[in-house]
Every structure is written in structure tokens, then in C-alpha cells.
Amino acid sequence: MRYLSDAIQRTFRAEQTYFVRSHAKINLTLDVLGRRSDGYHELITIMQTVDLNDTICLTATKDTSVRMICTRSELSNDDNLAAQAAQAIRQRLSLTQGLDIELHKRIPVAAGLGGGSSNAAAVLLALRQWWQLPLSTTDLQTIAAALGSDVPFFLTGGLALCEGRGERITPLAYRLPPSMRWIMLVKPAISVSTAVVFRNLTERDYSDGTASRSVLAALAALAEGGNQLPLENLHNSLEHSVLEQYPQVAQAREEMLRAGVPYVRLSGSGPTLFSTFSNLSQAAHVQQQLHAQGYEVYLTHAVYPDVEKKVE
Ligand code: C5P
Picture 1 (cartoon, rainbow, N blue to C red):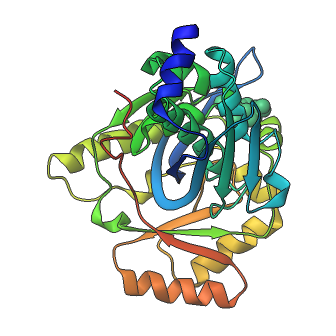
Picture 2 (tube, rainbow, N blue to C red):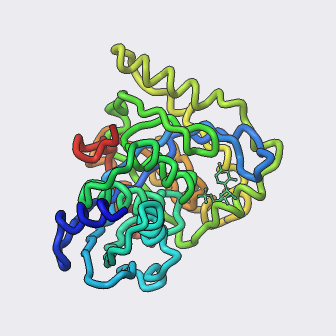
Picture 3 (cartoon, protein in one colour):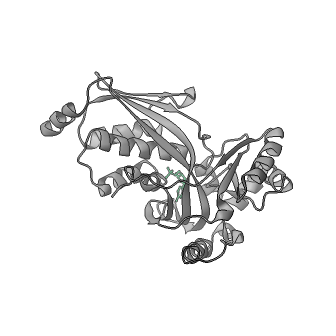
């Protein structure tokens, strides 16, 4: 441990800062196969990172505490997953180095877009890189999985198949088709608890994973020069229950369809809904219409891992 502290002391001075971006995700598919004996649910989900992002600024301090400062004051506390990620690394390596974590939040919170999980993964990757920590990919994945089911996905980002409770990641080298060039996110003005949504699932919501497998096959066919991704295969096992329990989400879905979107899917446990467009002017037209109705609307696009951020 002594060696570690010396190594770290050499790599930075107090007040030195490290900026990092933290992207949101959508679930192209989310098949819930069933409930497990540990209380979690067995999933097959295809996730994709999008350009919508938060900015995190890490500053080394002279003391030994981790301080969380967020543009949303309710997130400026030790419960924030970004702070927990820093604490997990400090604990794992017996480090006492102090750290300020400033988080500029732009990703909607408790929205099904993975913002908190993404922030945690970004802190793990940033600290490993900045402080040159002796943590293997497996170490990082283990720490990430302990922080939350979605955190391991964000260590690689891009397009990936996620299984188990979401923590078993297979990165996919495929790209979304032109029909999905622009991704519209519509966030109804409510927050949804992932735990509550999962708890309210019943047998009728479970699937056998067909949707994810067929989207996977379609993505593979696209890479071989195939045509389109059949949008009807985009499926979310949580959607039925969320639309039933939260009328605001059902209403937003109706408004989106009325505004002319080609289809609507829920991202994660919601309440954010998404649709896709090949054409920016059509997307902008729909965005203006929904915005005028009071919806929080983001027009974004798929992003793929930077070489430097990729965990090898
Ligand atoms: O893993 P994470 O803490 O993000 O999950 C939040 C909650 O969502 C869990 O406490 C659990 O109730 C539910 N969940 C689940 N099955 C999963 C992932 C999450 O039941 N695969």
C-alpha cells in the first residue's frame, strides 16, 4: 500500500483537475425473463449510449474526504453513485486521497437513462486513468457491478448486449441503421423508481428473450448489408406495467404518436420514452410540437466508445 500512495503522490498535485464526460443510454430492447431467488430479475437487454451527457470534474484535495457537488442540490450528497464509486476505489486500494466531484447534470434523473450509473462508471474509469491505479478490467467490472446493475455497461458504452441482472456485458461492433440516426427522448414530468417498477411485474410481463435475440440478428444482418431493423422488434418488458401505472407516461406516448413519430418505446424503467428518425428536419418538427405541449424533449444520437475510454 505504501508503494501505491507514493505512486499516486507522483501523479498529481492538490487542486489538479480531471474532466470527464458521462453519457446517457437507451434500451433498444429489455426482455425480463423472470424473477431470481436473490430478488433481482434475469434480463436480456440491448443498450446504446447516446450523446446526451453530464460533465464531471474531479479535483484532488489536500484532505481525506470525498465531497460531492452537483448542479442539482438534491444530488450533492454521499449517496450519489459517483461519490460511492470514488469511495469504493479508495476502500479497495486503501487510499486516503481527498477528492471533490463536481457534477454538471444534464441527463434527467430517475428517468430510465442510466445517468447515475453512467456517472459512477465515469468516476471509476477516470480515477484509474488519472491516478494510474493497478486495477484490472475484471476489478473495475466487479466494483461497478456492486454499485448497480447498469454500471458495468457504462465502462465500455456504445452498443452492447447485457445479460444476468444487466452486469454481464458483450460489446457489439454493430452500428444503428440510418432510420435510427436521430434519437428523440421525451421525459414526462415524473420520476419513476426502478425497484418499484420491477416489484410490480407479473408473469404476463416476462418474455423469453425473443425480442433481444431478433434485434441482435437484425443488427448482424445490417452489418452484412441488410436493409432495416424491424422496429416492431424493439421491446421493453417493463413498458406495459409502467404505462398502466403512470397515466402521464401513457399520455406522453399518445402525444408522441399524434405528433407523427414512427413508434414509441420506453427506456429502461422509464419514464423517458424514445423514438428515432432518419431525418433531422422531421425530428425537429416533432420536437417543437412536443416542446410546445410542455414536454422535456432531447434530440440526440448514438455514440460509441472513445479509444481512450474503452476498457481493454
Ligand atoms: O442494480 P440496481 O441497484 O441499479 O437496481 C435497482 C433495483 O431494480 C434493484 O433493487 C431491484 O429491485 C431492481 N432490479 C431488478 N432486476 C435487475 C435490475 C434491477 O429487480 N436485473
